[in-house]
Length: 129
Image 1 (cartoon, rainbow, N blue to C red):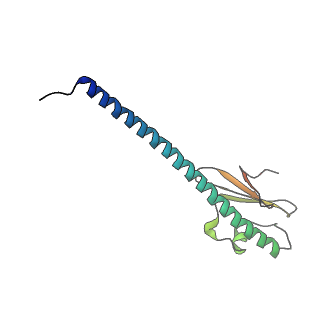
Image 2 (cartoon, rainbow, N blue to C red):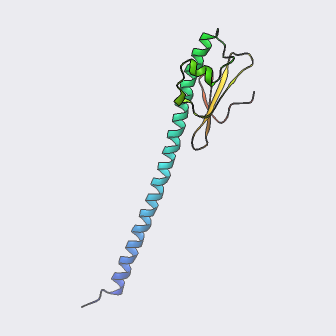
Image 3 (tube, rainbow, N blue to C red):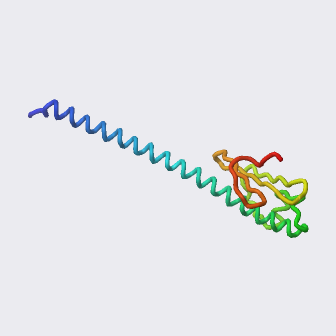
């Protein structure tokens, strides 16, 4: 029985190692893409939940002469917010004047997103003022 020439064996091993490395690189890219899609989906879920809470806040204000004063999770639930739609770490801050609010929630990846009474979303926590 003849043995394969050493050059052919070396070339085969080289090709196998290159294809293994490129496969690992592709798997790494796919895993990174998958995680970024999970993060984007979690952000979108919190934004959707905050938008639902904003609708409940508008309903609450209509029932209270245009004021958001006293708005909290319980009040928003009585104004139509479904309990499962409240994001993690949900808070609502109402201005002293009662004419505006800021609501925030967190994703499972720790991103905090907030929405103001103008309907604009922002990344990060509600401003302290």
